[in-house]
Length: 195
Image (cartoon, rainbow, N blue to C red; front, side, top):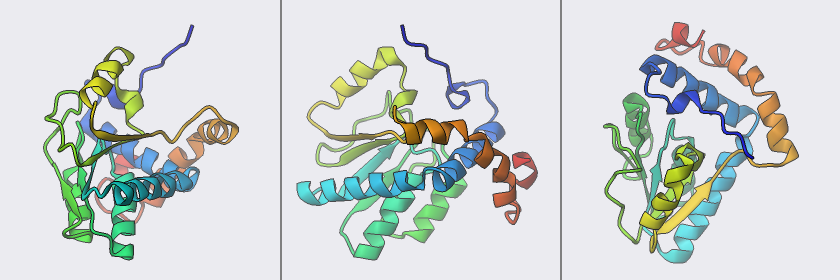
């Protein structure tokens, strides 16, 4: 028997300010203790896009869009012909607009909520990416989501797996959480919310 503990990020009763803070914590955690994850996942997606001749990577459930930011930077720095589309059920409009400005012509973002369980499917030629997002789909819906993606190009990346480095990263996850307010101290918006 497997136990599943719900995540705060998946609860509709959690206020937007707490959603934003949890995303800050997760983003900082991935950069500090699991920084290799974004680089690995983005490199895999870029290689797959080049092999298949895809012109767009669509990240569903993007959260703070760490994957898309890393991929967009690779695309820009290597001069690749690829665009990156971002969406989430709880989007961060300011963050997504910032990424569009940082990577003009590469990043496009949906700033309205998009539920990847019900959204219109991307073009069959696009590469769809779930980056640390697939585990948010309720177990009973996963088969239907995958069935709905049949015939599409789908990559599923998870930053936490059943190995020693992941277990260690999760065990010390409270440290980046405690350091998150200090990391963002120079940022005027949301400073006290993070504390």
